[in-house]
View 1 (cartoon, rainbow, N blue to C red):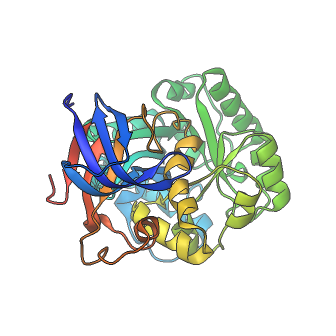
View 2 (view 1 turned 45 degrees about the vertical axis):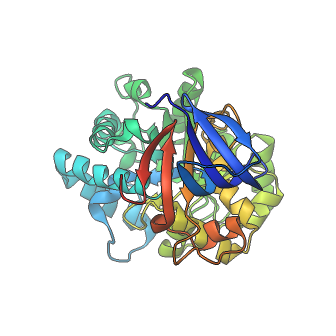
Length: 377
């Protein structure tokens, strides 16, 4: 890691309120040292934003991209297409495909992602190996939400002490719907996660509303999807300090409807964003932002915040990443404003949210070091 100062200059998306200001950012020792009001000579110039945080992925699905259309329960449910493919795929092939996806995650400006990893301890080991092969430690970080090996294909997990060893290698537990497992087993996992100070999360309200009440009763850190949830559900989640993660492009592909995003935000929920299954979507937050902005006509600052600071809050990392403030980690993306796509943009944040792509990235900075430039460095 570089220890010398690094200076950026341009339009800064500053603070937790994502205020636009002209000026410069000085980085030293892995952190943001200074934010000034003057534009000065700098190593990189452009629109300076926090790096993206992808709050929900399934990286293992990289081995089965673009499957034929089928009902979601047959596609990703216990014993469905996805889990059959994962069971049939050789370990080295799985690692190789996940490595490619992790490289793509980074190439699109994301420096933290949370992955729901199937396959127990072996599945977690494969993800960590892929992360290492992709050079992840030098340019991004990940949160692993594992699950017991039998947690992908049976109604009853029948959890043993051996399977509980999963806690030693993960940041949390990420389960499918309460409709897929017994409430007793899920309560055991949720309680063990709390005891070990690990996170616990699961999917709910994707196919129907039947699993939402049971999910909330488990008091997870966050719930994914919630396309069928109501204002009453959001009120109960808010009362229990449960965050939400939406996966808009994934919901469009599966045809199960879109979450009531305005209601979520009006209820005061912390709402983060994920790209979900790699089999259905690229892990590109630029694309996710554009879809959210144009479908829901939300304020662009709100959309950018959902993909950075809010997602960091979902993962309990907001003290360190997610916004540009002195003392925080220097995990930043600089967007060029002189590319054919961005030239002429009058509102920098709107331009980033509604039209920017990986091709408009000037540089990615990870804890003081420029780890990517538009020249592919």
